[in-house]
Image 1 (cartoon, rainbow, N blue to C red):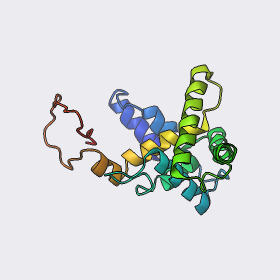
Image 2 (image 1 turned 90 degrees about the horizontal axis):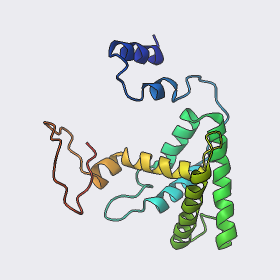
Image 3 (image 1 turned 120 degrees about the vertical axis):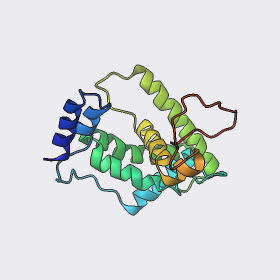
Image 4 (image 1 turned 60 degrees about the horizontal axis):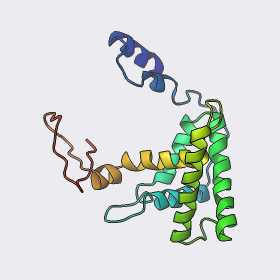
Length: 188
């Protein structure tokens, strides 16, 4: 019995109550055949810098400390469909080209302020794209990068334990805990 069959069986036993069971069943590729997507060390460094620009180090570690670039490569390579892999890989080039157009230098050569301004402009572009996007249209590459950055960071040890409040063994469930302005969100 493979993982897919086991999850299907458990879902049936529980009356289909597993949320996201469809994602578990079809979310990641099951073939061991390489889809041809490879990332170089330069690509990972590039993704780390993009992620660090989105979530920079402050009083808490930034995205680069959480190795978000490596996280992105694993998800894109192992879980994305071919069409989304292509959009993501083309997006690496488009982001660098946008930097060259806006700043007259590559993203990696740009200052942190120039990187920030570029990503703010790309975020606005992807938001406008999302408003008019049809279901069959491809995803916007920067939206993918931003979502993977947030996902990778907040599920990492650095993000969950240093940027969020974390209790390894939280004890009983308390459904209504007062929130004070400035408190960290809960990771657990």
